[in-house]
Image (tube, rainbow, N blue to C red):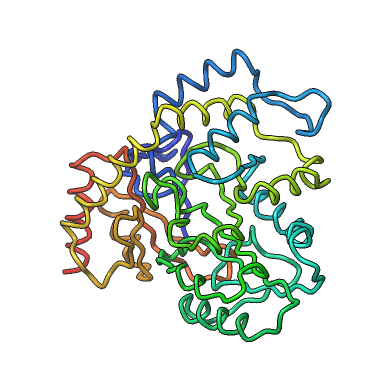
Length: 364
């Protein structure tokens, strides 16, 4: 696998260190926040107030109000009872997996736990009992519901899944879990890293698929460093669950993200900048979809900014025509590489038209 290097942050284009320029259709900066002027302005202003970093426990005797203010704003955006921000998406997932049993113990008298891991679930949600499954997601979900419904009362079930498939993109129907007969003994843990900001009404994710009973027992985690552009992670759900998490030594012992980024997140949410960027992104995705049509070359989701192919030759074809996508094994070196084309709100009509032309030539 070839690798390429650059000394500048990619936007619509990327220039490699050997001087070649390509149209850039990769990464996860779906809303183009890496080059967003509103973001830049808020961050520069916040740095004057909050400095460059804050290396302290969130549970220290002196606390910066901006973290709590941002968490309230984020929870309001997500229509969730409570939210917490932490240093990264990976830590958000691992922190939750370390405290999920104390969280569940507060709602049940059982001390028996069974974990159900979805196909391809991100390592952020891997626990000590993690086992891979080769089932397709829908088959796994249906079997999981059947298994849980057939288990005698007294066991707490923890279901862990990504919100959308990655790196090979695929949509998941979470309404399957609405058939759980005793949701009070089930906790659903969903990683929204590749859906937050781009899936659901206003980019609020997949929560609308869940019944009220299941949603009450669902905790979401996410990287904020993809569509939202914030180098941090988030956890949201029931207030009691978030309160329990905050009392954990795993939470107290970790430094928070830089407060200037917390301020920028609060401001961008309040000003609805993300929703404006999402509107542009959806226009771009629609334009490309109209041109390439329903081809067997790509696996994609309606309205989602990623087009994937298992055909590794596509990457080289794109590169030879001045377009850089991505093609590498993920999450481990043993995994098959996926050619992944990512659209962003930064792309212009001519960029999308060029991509469509080159892809159609490959198909032909």
